[in-house]
Image (cartoon, rainbow, N blue to C red; front, side, top):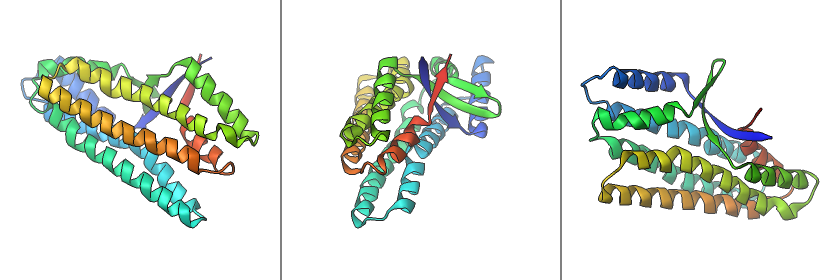
Length: 227
């Protein structure tokens, strides 16, 4: 049984991306780095919105305990930091690149896109063993065993990191940045992801058995079964 993660992208953003790809293929002379940087930043915001911000907003509406407000506030700070980093560094990183250097990056992302009817998705693969381990833990939690909550959240971190690798680290390598820029970007990626992973792991230790399936199901919804 094979699964992949599918994250929605707004149709308008996708159409901008396709326009840039077509113009690059046509050999347009006008520099497209700024346009592409803005599109990639938009995609990152949309991904974070559906994966984390939507969950946080729903979490706030469900809060019944005073300590829950602190949990939500801690999560919000991490998400704001990650969003700020993407908005700042994605356009900056490629701003000076020629169209020729951008073409491999655009083609890479084009292969990550899937269309299903009117919906557009960015898709990435996850190790089947990680998926199986995650789903097994989810079933145990649904059966009322709280001991697997924290390990299940750690599994979610592994699924997310597969996306970070395929959507950020690998395409970054295609651009062959100079040493200074590459080191800066590696630092930004490491700090942002570590903050997010630690927050999610902490959440796995904070939530109770009654609410744990709600959080886990939010992330599991992005898994699509593929024949």
